Structures are given as structure tokens and as C-alpha cells.
Image (cartoon, rainbow, N blue to C red):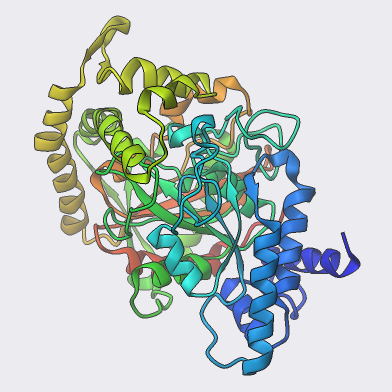
Length: 499
């Protein structure tokens, strides 16, 4: 690494972690773009530092593809244009490096979905969400590793590893899980490789990795973002989502993708947040302590906290989650494979799956259209799917809407994950672990409401990140972000990893 790049990398890492960092380095993506436009910072320097940092943390297995040549060429061109135009016509993300989960199309780069059968698939066009970010000036430095086919929450994927260990590793402790399925984006952010990136979320897949790696993530209201050019699981539940180190960057990425005016920090004294008992269960000591401390901060800042009941929440959610994801995956993946011209059938895809948990899910449930029943039996998925779509999901959505309305809530607040990151091993992909991790992220996903994950602390014992989530009414994305902008100074940002 050159001295220039080393200094830039250290400056970026320091700045995103501390308000006391050098004033010459960008605190967030918007500041980086302004610095590049003003000539205070070269895009090539920032992109080069990000690439070098990605290589330094190769043991994280965060990347499937690192586009060094393409990203540096794009950065050089931006610097030339900036110099010629004297900063005129700058865009919100001019010259800023980002990363993109490997199930989202980036033109000319492999889009593997984390699975071997798609290793040679190179889309010719950007997914609309990527196109919007690149049109705003962002530079994609690489595609990030993920739980295979996005079917899991651990990121423990034997395919495409750059380090000596299996699966994506936690930026704060490489013996721990990075979460999933947007594991690589979460790890890259936690390791301070970049300031922002994209993931996808079906049941927690942008929020869980950010809870484990200390970043911010938004699962938008379903339908807010275009879903074309993304390898699917469930068209009813899937959405792309922005992930970043700063609230301002998640707000900016959402604004670039979905439009609308800039959000301003909310008045916390007018904010009402609900506490729902089932979402406060099963916490480990670090998460409990961090969450209790945050509740005290919220009360001190004038936020109104309200205990609310959500009758049959878990029952309704259980009737929706697996039936939707497992049933819709077959048709949605078949349609994707045919429409993108991969030349891969769903049977060939399943044959080459590298992760035992995902292979078992595809061959035992997705392809035969089955659901797990009592006593290890299998049942036809269609009746449960029909019931979920006709009855259970509408009832779940009605329950959320009624709860927000009756209690005049801006959001429900809870720990994103009840426990800090688990060990990065095969057990991290087990069914019991999966169910425990998605305890709080799954219900809102099935209801289609927006969810905002924010880091709140490093665990007192584990020294691992702890996350807090706010779930708001459907369509309240910008207001949820405004609350997040007000809360970030209250919570503070987490320090970077030691390495």
C-alpha cells in the first residue's frame, strides 16, 4: 500500500468512528462528495483507500468480487471532470465508493447470489437501485458475499471465501458471525472499508448484519424500491435496503433511490415509541444492559415510551413467514433464472449449492413445494400459502396498523437481535439459531412495514455491537429516518474495530 493510500484509509476509518477525527476526512458519504467536488479530496484517493482496506481485511470474506481496475478508472474520470468543471454540476454521491450485495445486478460484474451455479453470470445492466446510486455519482468497488441465495441469517457460506476460514466474519471479532444475509456489506461497513452500501432484506437481512457489525440499515416499506435486477426469495417480502455507518448516509441513499426532500431530525419530545413484550424476550446480558441504558436515554430526551399489547402477534407471524418465503421462492427464482438468461435451471442451481442448510432447504422444501410439519413430517405448502395471503398476512398488517393508530405511535422500539453475534460455525446456520435471531425482525417484514436498525453500544462483556430497531407504520420511511437522525447524537457512533 502506498503512503498516500495508507493515510487516506486511516483518515477515513478514524473519521467515521469519532467526531474528534481529522476535519480533512469525510464524516459521511455526503461530506465525502462535497469534499471531492470542492477539490479537497480526490475520488481516486478515497476509492484506492477503500480497495486497500478491503484487501487488508480479506480474512472477513466480505467480497466475492473486488473491481479494483474499474473502480479506480471511474474515480480518475470523476477527478478529471471535477478539475475541468471546477466543481460545477456535482451530484449527491460524486466519487464516493460503495459496495453492493452479490444478489443485486451491477453491469459487467458477476452476480453470483453467493452460489456456485451463478459464478459466471454477468448482468449487462444495473439493477434500478444501483442505477440510481451510480447516477448520483457513487462508485461500486465490489460485490459483497452473502448467505447463499439470501436464505439465511449467518453468512456462513463455504463458497467464494478470500480468507482461511469459512463464511463472512464479524468486523469486531472474526470468530463471530457477520449476520445475514447481507453479511459482506455489513462486515465491509463494520471494518470501515466504505461508508455505505446496499443489501437486501426478506426477514432481517440488512438489519441483522448491521446489528452485528455496528452500522445503520433501513428496511423500507415493501414496494418503496424497485426490485428488478435482484435475485429473489419472495416477491411479497423482498426489498433492497441501504446500509451505512451514519444515519445521514442511510437517509441520503433512501432519498436518492426513492426521491423526496431531505429529512430533518425529528423533535424527540413529540415522539411516541411502543414497547411490545414478545420483542423484549430472550435477551442476553449485554443486549439487556444496552437496551435498558437506551430506554433511559430516550426518556431523558423527552421521548414518550408506551407499553402496548399486540395480541396474537407471534401466532400470526408464524402463519405467514415460512409459507410465503418457501412457497414463493420456487416460482420467483424460476422466473428470475429464465428472465436473466443465466442458462441455469432451478434444479441445476440446487445441485451446486455449497451451504448444507441452503441445499437442504432447496431440495427438501422449495423445489418439492413443501413445508415442515410436526414430527419431522412434510406438508403441501400451497394451502398454508393461500391461508397466509388471504387471512394471516392481512390480519398481521391490520394488527400493526391498529397498534400504531390506537396508541398514536411513531414506531415500535426493540433490540434488533436479542443477542450479540454468535460463533461463526455451522451451528450458526441451524434452525434454532435462525429462529432466535429473526425473533424481532421477522414480524415487521411479514407485515411489510419499514424498519430502521441503529447501533447503540458495544456489549460490556462481549465487546460486540448491539443494535436497536424502530418499526414504523407502512409508508412512514422518511419520518422514521427523521427520528433516527435525532437519535444518532443521543446514542453516539460506535468506535471502530481494533484492527
